Image (cartoon, rainbow, N blue to C red):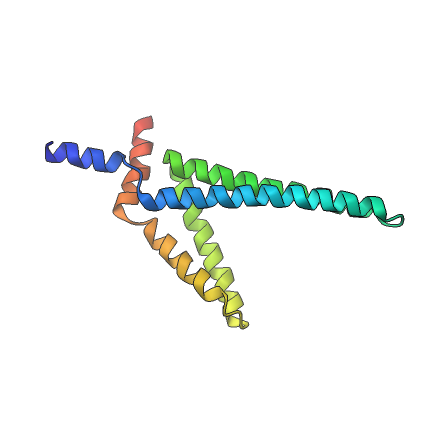
Length: 146
C-alpha cells in the first residue's frame, strides 16, 4: 500500500473517540426516553388519584414528557451526525461542551465539587474535537458532497 492509499484509508475510518461519543449520546437518549415514559405513566397515575389537581398534574406530566422527548430526539440526532460524519455534529458537540463547561464552572464557584469531573470531561471532549484526525473525518464527509 502506498503512502497516499494509507492516508486515505486512515482518514476514511471513524476515530474511536467519535464512536464512543456517539454511543454515549445513544445511551443517554435511550435513558431519557425511558425516563419520559416513566414520568408520563407516574403523572397519569398520580393525576387519576387526585380529585382536586388531576388535570394540572396530568398536564404537567405531559409537558415534562414532551420536553424530555424533544431532548432525547436531539441526542439521537447528534449521535446520527457523529456516526455519519456530518460537520454540524462536530460543531454541536463543541458548543455543548463549552456550554456545559461554563455551567459546571459556575456550580463549582458556589461549592459543587462534583462538577470537577464534568469540567475535566468537557475540556477533554473540546480538545478532542479539534484533533487533526477528527477534523479530517468530518471534513472528508463534507467533501463527499462536493
